[in-house]
Image (cartoon, rainbow, N blue to C red; front, top):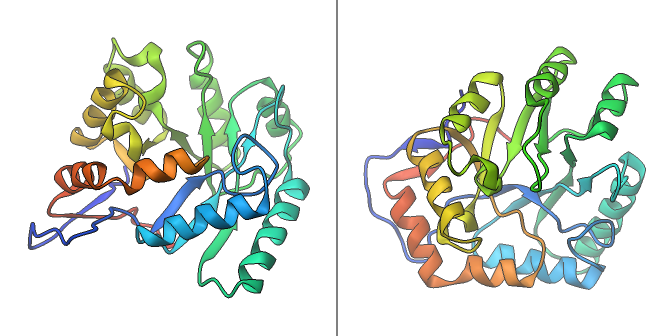
Amino acid sequence: MFSIFKKKNTVSISKGYFPILTDIHSHILPGIDDGSPNIDTSINLIEGLMKIGIKKSIATPHIIGDLYRNNSITINNALVLLKNEITARNIDFNVSAAAEYMLDDYFLELLTNKIPLLTIKDNFVLTEFSYAERPYNQQQMVFCLITEGYQPILAHPERYGYYHNDYKQYHLLNELGFLLQVNLLSLTGYYGKPVAKAANYIVKNNLASFTATDLHHSRHLQALQLPSNQRIFAEIFAGKTFNTEMSF
């Protein structure tokens, strides 16, 4: 299992500490999902990320069968538009793109038809479950992904309320083959106390392999920038450096 932490020799945390330099989960591409609606908003979000110390974002727009049927063309077109604007404004920021795949029937269709998935890096694929109901086929989904040569990352498992009364499920998800990605704002109570409790459990029990912003809009950015929330990050990650053990 990957670990998000690497021990340091000191517990000193500098002012303005932020636990990640590369953000592997964000919705900053303009106009293709429920994230940034336009190029100016995308640039504003990027400039805000830079202020808290992030050097690179891997944009991960949703691919959901009944809502956002994005593909390599729509995502690449939005990425090119954003990168061109970054260059035009002389902004020193690295952005690339993958996707956040809802594990639904449409996703199984993509796998069945051997459609290449958009990966975070190498074979790592960001996935998500429905918030509404517990997946009945999570074992089948992860088996299909691994059989096709992919390593699934499950986004924000702490936000799926159906797991809040059964934390053993987080261990089971790891055992099935999912790497878990916790949202930073989940740790602050932004999504409510049950989510914060679950997120802390996942991190403190070394079940998380990644953490990320899951940035959608300016309200997320403002929360990430709050000194009180940054102190929470410092307390949780004190003496440790975020480390995905991967080079993006």
